[in-house]
Image (cartoon, rainbow, N blue to C red; front, top):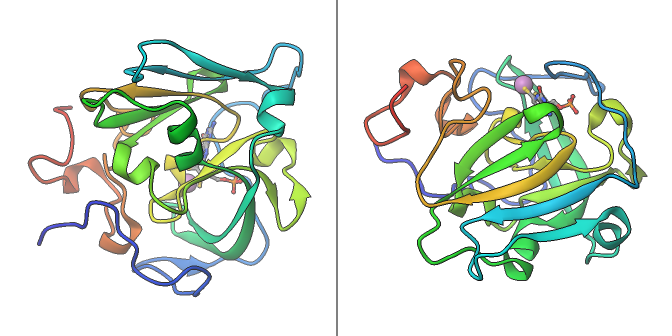
Length: 210
Ligand SMILES: Nc1nc2c(c(=O)[nH]1)N[C@H]1C(S)=C(S)[C@@H](COP(=O)(O)O)O[C@H]1N2
Ligand SMILES: [Mo]
C-alpha cells in the first residue's frame, strides 16, 4: 500500500495511539549523547543548502525569539514504543521558516541539524506540513535543557527521532540523505501510523541505499 506524502491521520488534538505504542505518564528524556550548554551569544539558527537565492539565512537568538509564535497540540511517539499525548507546543512553524527562507525549486528533502552533529532527514513535504513546529515552549513553559532548549523540532506525524532537540539549522537538499538514526537502523521515513520503525522495513523508494 502506498503511504501518504504527508499524512494527517486525525484532527489536531485528537488523542489516539499508533500501532504498537503505549501511553507514557510524564515526560521521559530520551536522546543520544550529552545535553549541550546553551551559549546565547554564539547561538545561530541557519537555513542553508539549496535555498531559492543560493544564500544562507541566519537568525541569532534574539531574532529567532522575535519570529511569529504559533501553538500546535500534538503527540510525541518514540520508536522505543512510548507515546506522550496532547502536549501544546509553542514556537515557530517550520512552514513559516520555509516562507522566510524559501528552498530552491529542485529541493526535495531537508536535513535538520542539531548540536554535536545530530541530524534527521525528511521530505520537504513533511517538514513544511501544517503542524511541524520549532518548539521553544511546551504547555506554556520554556523547554528545559534536557528537552531541547532553546529550540527543538516537533513533526507530529513522524516518530520523535525526526524531531531533533537543540536544533541549529536546516539544510535544503536536492536529493535525500540519511540522518543520524536513519543511518543506524531506523526507517528513512518514520511514519508511526504505518509502523515504519526500522530500515529493514523500507520499500524501494523509501530511502537512499544503506
Ligand atoms: N539532538 C537530539 N535530538 C533528539 C534525539 C537525540 O538523540 N538527539 N533523540 C530523539 C528521540 S529518539 C526522541 S524519542 C525525542 C525525545 O524527546 P524528549 O527527550 O523531549 O522526550 O527526542 C529526539 N530528539
Ligand atoms: Mo525516540
